Amino acid sequence: MKVRALQYVVLLGVAAIFLGPLYWLISTAVKQPADIYQWPPDWWPDTFSWENFSLAWNAAPFDRFFLNSTVITVAGTALKVANAVLTAYAFAYLRFPFKKPLFLLILGAMMVPGHVTLLPNYLTVASLGWINTYAGLIIPGIGSAFATFLMRQHFLTLPTEVTDAAAVDGAGHLRTLWRVVLPMSRPMLITVVVITAVEEWNNFVWPLIVTNTAEMRTLPVGLLILKDEEGLANWGTIMAGTLLVLAPMLLIFLVAQRYIVGGITQGALKG
Image (cartoon, rainbow, N blue to C red; front, top):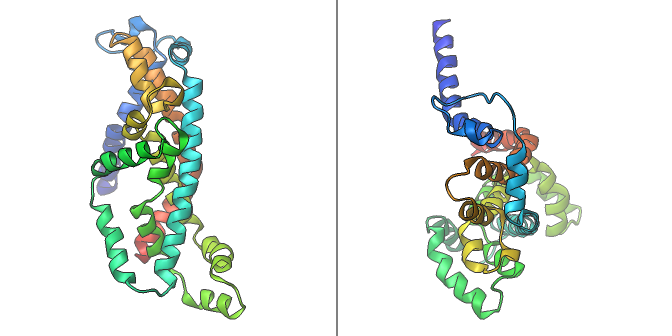
């Protein structure tokens, strides 16, 4: 009994460490300016003020930032996941020359820091005339070694009898992938989609260097503009803008968390 109580105490402590900053962000976003700088700090605001959200939305073209982030996240996630699924299927089920060295090359790409590719990607995008365009924001990032690795490892855990039966029935590779393999991989596929969407939504460095007008900026870059507009005095507005950026991803996680836990657990058990 004492051991279980100690486990609950440890879990509550860890949860407080992770959720504390998020709670402070939300509470600051709904406080009035005088309450933000109160000492000792007021953990629960006496009155809720929603003015910070309208101030943040009007201080910068957040509607345009939101549109840009949505387009980039949806298109980038779809292309990246489709690329990862097709590549993973090839490495899991097809036979072709240099298969093992090529997969080792993909694994090696996971060890390369993303910032190393910024300069060559920028020079390529600039030579194609894609600076300050959706193509320049999306296309360079459609390859994901991590997503390919996850999907390939999951495909290898599926029973080969099922894919063999589809081949006997005359199904081609694309039909086998679409009608047999992907329906059996739903939790892992949703996990990869959510991880990729969060990565695309939160991407800051690449949109910052490949765009040069406010019309093509994304929400994370828009927060930088909001901080420059508001300075370091109006933290309520900045926290409200930050919450607007976080809210869609928090909603997606809450909706898909059952599949994410299932996918990760499945990978842990079968990996």
